[in-house]
Image (cartoon, rainbow, N blue to C red; front, side):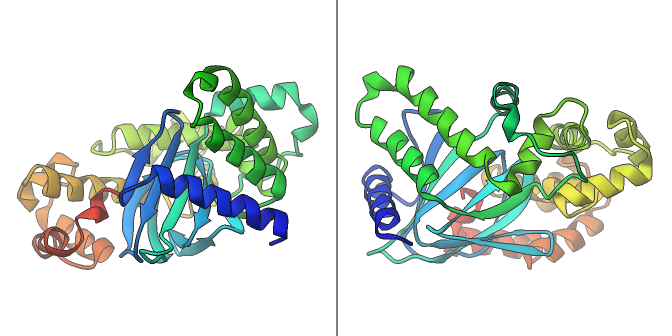
Length: 305
């Protein structure tokens, strides 16, 4: 990093640490802006990454989507263009230099408006790109993020100035070559937007026994086209995607509502408790009862990351 970038990152870290006093997620006065802090490396956490950009001010994290691993740090930011089940892990953090992340939510409508007003940002259509990517941070992007963080010191300025800075951040993101996925998901009737529609349905009704034919019809695609485009964006099939959503929700139910495994599995749509136990073990590394005991005894933050 250049000296200018170093100063930006140092101030971002200072401001993030001043606001995020405790580990975990900290909301801010801006609904779209959240901070995350960890004072030590974490175990793998399973969560849904909603459309957002994650800027790390200090520390390092890795995210796994299917069999792919993405590493990001103050030199690189991560973007999720659609809802994705991701396994995340903070890999660099100490109490003296905690992991500090700034998360800004992204809205498809605002992305569409940006492309309508700035046609030069549009790139030629191609096969839908991966819905998760890591890209190199630049001075212009970090400077805009820092100015947004500074505005938190003057709440009276937020209603007028924050939307303008948010637009600038979005503009900087869309200048990146890898942001083609953001463009595709914002374009009406693009393959990526059709897949995003399927993802929304799976997320909303994950307990439902979806047929591939129904999902393909929803996307206005053939079964084979649905599989190809869905895999291109999410690195998994629709049924694999749904399985991860079900298992994550079952794990949350086990922990927060103190349900037994059979009840939780039925609640999320499993008809066979033995199949649920096998697939739960495969994803989380332990059967439900032992996994729940481990979380309660050693790492309750695994369900709150």
